[in-house]
Length: 386
Image (cartoon, rainbow, N blue to C red; front, side, top):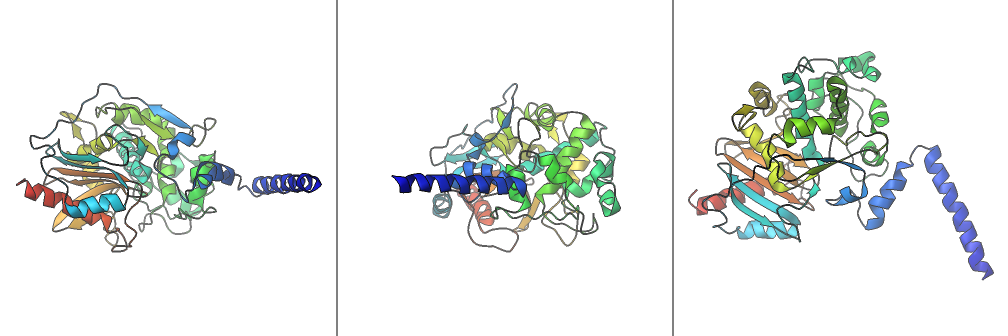
């Protein structure tokens, strides 16, 4: 009995010291990481983790359901696609042809209205909000300095960062995009309750505007710029600019750093479903027009889906770009294999959501699952003579 008492006494002491060390070293965000992710058997963020974070509800208005194609679900998935969906934990796979649902399937207990985490697909939305802010006169153009809105970036090379640099991932900051390291700034940003403090602490280490370097911090900084420029919370601006006008069928959730600071995790974490995510792909496919109304400037959209830098043809402004079989695809892309893939000439949108992506490195930029999802969709449409 005495041994048990001594054990719990020392356990309490060690535990208290550990917590104190975390606060002293400013790594107390790890407490939330352990509670929400690691103790639940995960080594990184996962599709349903939104239930364990603060979030803002973003309402829909008048739903505009996608019509079903006349050949809806008449063609079965290929064996290769079915195996990939099983092996990589797909929860939703859609093919939208001529703005109609041509094929859809759901797995693992998910259905058409199930919510899951967008992860970095959210970056495309934030870039779109930059275009909206320019269209409405809140921001002058892509060359406007970030310093006009964020005073922490007004010295040295930092004052050279433009809003366009943030959208195209060219800020030159020391952001480290490491998802699985508990001590990386990416992990800190995901669990810290004061995102603005994290972003304002970034340092510029290379000249801004010269080259592409994928950095979630750029999108988060852009969100802070947009809130300053518009005078609105980003989730409010998103709701009025896109979520309601695009006729989303379901409300969505956007994770916050905390209720106290009320800043969205702009680089990730919009919780929605495959059909509503697809709407933003359609908006860009149609160069910013929706039901006859120009929601985004067509010139901005055209610029967004073309490379900014010749040596980085894989990225434009908030959108990933890929050439495959002589066709130009652009896509929203998120952690663990969340994709909205658009081919405008064929009027095709492919959506895949799931628990993981293919384990291979692919060509170094794209994992092997992306070309597979494209190829198998086209095989299915060819089988249906479409």
